[in-house]
Image (cartoon, rainbow, N blue to C red; front, side, top):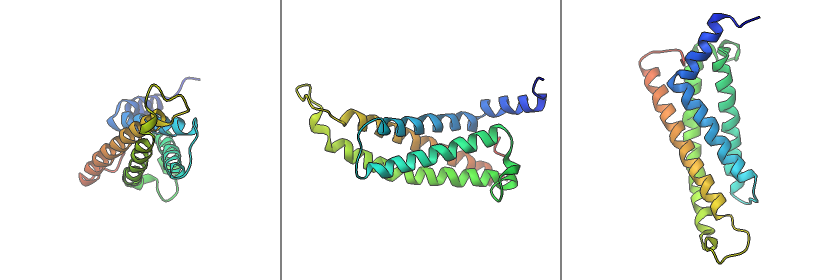
Length: 162
């Protein structure tokens, strides 16, 4: 049985929309951040980075699929008419929490800068932390852009995400 035309149309509309593209980028950069860290040895304050990255990756994934499937009315308290505001608050919280993540990653990257020499033969986390820092910066920028975009939509009185 083929999908109903209105469901198929909503899929395409959301995936082609600015917010759909931004959500996909958030998912990719968040996954890049936590996979880069989790695939290597980590300790100390990197646990906070991993917590923030995984938490917002999962929340963004859930928001993406709920919006994609147009099931926002099934979400208690946060859904329905409050879905745009819920997404806006999610993106603001992510952008704010990604700032200390960037700080931690820059600090850790600088601490391992000594082993970035070709003559250094031991295991070095410099490149791992540098890649994670780049993913964290890109993720923060994308969450910030999304928060500004949805804030503008909310100020114009719009109620829908798409």
